[in-house]
Length: 271
Image (cartoon, rainbow, N blue to C red; front, side):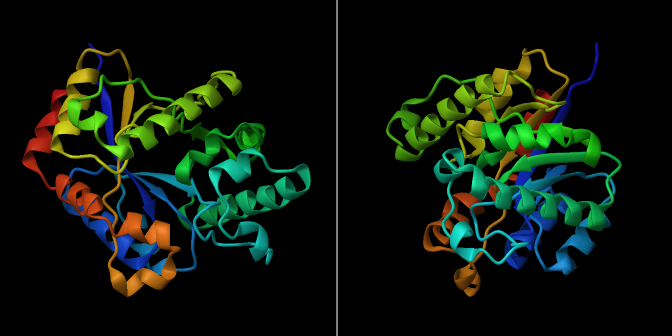
């Protein structure tokens, strides 16, 4: 019987110094073994991450959260959202392609991956015209993996049904699932993915439910997404208000602590 590979994965490395520092701690001393990286001007944290050899490293393309801009068209990139990207006109798409290319080139320059692995901040890689662009560029950039954010539904708990964040995640879940079929079910070596449905509300109980759900599922690789990178008020000016509230939320601190939990290690080994 083959051994399943579990990637306990964090997004958002590189978004700020504190976020990077906290995720790096989880990679060094906790259960995390996989990370997605936002490209920015702070090479200090990239240099630290490069030294960790047994960690899976992916590019986290950022177009919506104060991206590191190649061009100076700040008006286009200010408060750019998933919905605005989904409905974007062809002229502006060209500027987005330039930014995507720039982030890819910078990632390759810094990390020198043998094969490039990609996902997107707020799952923007699932937007069909962005996904198709990455798919067409797979040979040129040696793209080996693009995250398939389409996941299986886990029967909700009573607590989920009275949580507004769960309904927000459920809406995103169905949008992504629809786009997955629009993209003709291409997944390009993506591990089985889970974490969107409990994004921002992960705790021991949700991870236990996840481990039980996937215990008897057939898969080779499973990526479990959490968000342990958090910041405090010292970095408030680096974020738009809604994003700061998310990065500074107590749920992120809960997910940070999960990375050092012996019980979580047991759950990951259980799958």
